[in-house]
Length: 356
Ligand code: PMP
Image (cartoon, rainbow, N blue to C red; front, side, top):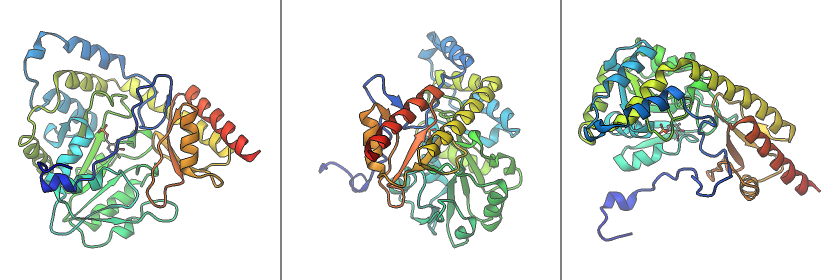
């Protein structure tokens, strides 16, 4: 608290990111990073861009990267926006597209940054409860609203809607912007990008942090009708005209173009997810169906906080949320099979000792 702060800053409740530990040797399954390094072609491109040209500002429009994303998705470059992580893209989306006279709708259990952006930009919102199976029910969104945002797959639950559901949502709300946050779509969801040609109110947000293993580079994107993209460009050019630095644009472009690395890595993670689900079920956990690079799990006989702390004491970091309805769940990012085995062994130790 300070007397120098503005009222808006006094009122903020900032987002709390997962722990990035200083201590080496921990098994880090808490922030949904990729357990494998990025495409070697991305690293080569970053090295090649590390030269005297860094004295120059980057391309304010990131034309090369937007061109690569447009080719990947089969859309025009005017339908693509890029930013410094999808968090920054989302911030511009909240400011540029989601503040209207009626409230914004999003699930009660979802990405916890959404209410934070609402606080920052003064967006009125109403949450819509997930059903008993922790699934989004599209029918529950049939109510007056100014806009809708949903992650698909949802976070931290990992469950996905199919494209028919997204189509219904768009048909139900033709006059409202509908934003689908596809941070985890590459691990099993169906991308709504293919609906963009039919729905001018649809904006899809994606990131290179998860399925391209570039969380440290901070690159995210949005794809939609040029009118929606223009709103984001107007906000960006009133905030920071150069969000992507030269190294980020070079690395991200090469990463998008390396389809071979991408396909191999995501299928490895999906295989490890199936293997880890089996291991957790064998230890008595209820595992929410996941189309993401994490699992959302609960043990019927153990509190979430207790398991989280016991794993931390054994050098394994997972994510625990204290919100109502999910306080006994853990969100576990998919690691390498070796990391998942360390987690499973730690759990065997914890559950075995408590049972004895
Ligand atoms: N959306 C969702 C649903 C997320 O879980 C995350 C990761 N915390 C993001 C967006 C932001 O990812 P990034 O800023 O790394 O692109």
